[in-house]
Structure formats: C-alpha cells, structure tokens
Length: 391
Image (tube, rainbow, N blue to C red; front, side):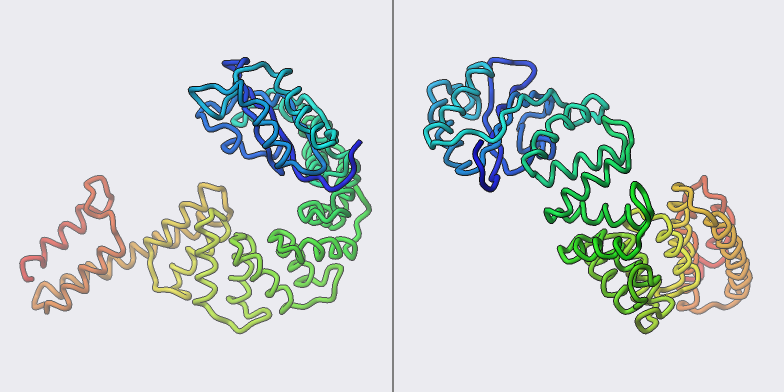
C-alpha cells in the first residue's frame, strides 16, 4: 500500500448505451461527490463509474501516461472516448501507475448511478464506495458516511454512529463535519448534550469560514449558550454568514438592526437584510418584509408589495401571514374609499398635480386594476372617467 497524501482519483466512465466506449478522467473529488457535468458532457448523465483508482502521489502524471497508453484505442470521432472494454482500460491505468513505481491506494469497482435520481439503491452503493475511502482517512468520505447515518440514507438511522463518523472527519479538519458535530452536541442527538462542546466545534468550523457554523456560533453568543453572552460577537458572526448569502443569518441581522441588539437601530439596514433573505425564499423574512412595506419601516409604504411578499410566505405555510394579509386588504379598501372621496372633490376643480397624484396613488395601490377580472376594475374605471377629461 502506498502511503502519502492523497491527491486524486482516476475514473473509468462508460455510458450505459455503449459498453465498448470508455472515458478516462482524473479529479481530486471522491467519486460520490463528483460534479456530473464535469464527468459527462452529454445530456444523458446516466453512466457507470466502472473503476475508481485512488493514487497517493503523481495523479496528473499517471493520468497523462494512461492517456498516452490508451491513445492507439482512441475513437477518431471523439478524442475523449476510447474504444475498448472496462477491464482493458483498468489494465492501462495500472500499467501507467507501475511505470511511476506506484500502486493505487484503492481499486474499486463502484456502481451504476443516475445523478438525476436520489434512490435508496444509489445511497447504498455510494456508501460502500465511501467506506473504502474512509478507511484511508478521507474526511469527505467520513463526513458522507456520517450524513448517511444521520439521515437514514442507504442505512438505518443511527445518530450515535453518525457522531462517531462526524468525529473522525471533524478531527481531520472537515468544516461541515465540525459544524454537524456541534449541532449534535447542541441538541444532544447521538451524544450527551454539551453546549460548551458544541460551541467549541462551531468555533473550529466558523474559523474556516463556514457560514452555517458562523450562524450557529452566533446563536451561542446571542443566547449565552456554551459561551458568555455577547450580542456584538453574535452580530459579527451573523454578518460574516450574511455576506456569504446565508438567508437565516441575513434575517437575524435584520432583527438586530430592528431591535438595536449589538448595534444601533437602523430600519433601512434591517429592511435591506430582510429583502436579501426574502429573495432567497425564507418565509419568515418574506412575512417580516411585508410588514416593512405595510408600516413603511425602512422603506416607503407599499401595500401592493406587502401583499406580494405575504402571499409568498402563505404559500410556504408561514403562520400569522394570513391575518396580516387581511389587515392589508382592509387598509387598501379604506385607502380606496379615501381616494374615491378625494376624487369627488377633485372633479369640481382639480389641478394637474392633484390629478397626477391621485392617478399615481391608484396605480401604486392597485397595479392590476386595469385587468377586467380584477375586483376593483369597474370602481377605478369609474374614478378615471370622473376626472380623466380634466387633464
């Protein structure tokens, strides 16, 4: 067995429709985490990973030599394909490794896998492949195994076993594993609850720039859980995660600006962060953003925008959104009555600026009024008839 730092895998790929044509690829990724688009240019992404060779050193040189040995078998219609069977392709890669006096750390026939289907069979096959790499200390594979046990993907759910694998990957510096292990300690899942230990692992992952860990550690400081309570530190961490596009951190940062926790109150900043999170489909941010538009907090009052974001939140089942929507509809009805009363006055002797203002108000409150199926179509049409000729 060759020792040393792993530098990559060499794959032999074969499209299901033609088992005499193979493709050779090299990557630093484990087979189960490989990007399917980089592995298969064709639109049909279903193929067989016939063999995965894990070499400890010289992966690029071995790949280059393998291609040189395979060149006589190259398909003249496609320089990426070779016209030979899987076992023969394996032998060529073995010969390339031998010429550099290196044997592969792992030779493994993997599985048929369809990247468009998340099936139990695929998880089982991926798990077998990951366990081989995990035995060689691959933290990505160890994390994958832990996630399978945590989610019950390909195996029976076993949180204690998940923690065991999270620890292996976390101790090797895997940020996602460190964060997941922190969550396990924080909630007492698969291990005795220990907030101090949870915060310790969150810190390790947060230092590596992992947004979810920054988010979790921010909660620890905000609530004084496992660390001393520190609102400024929580804001700092949530800001780091928010600038990476993490929606929950963006929402939390908005709340801090709204309530003045760890910073000065700034409704415009709060509105901006709520908007970013709402645009990423976070329902609670959508509901809060609707409130901003309804109350004119940090932005102009806009009943139409408030209704738009509330309807999005309602579709996701956000609680209390329907009550707020009813209030907005009632407010819009009240506004409409005021507009109607004002139009009666304007129709006597309006000025052009007044007419422009009332028209703008109508368009803003009821942007879809001109559609004949709109409940307000006829009412607003009558208003326009009342003073449009005075323009």
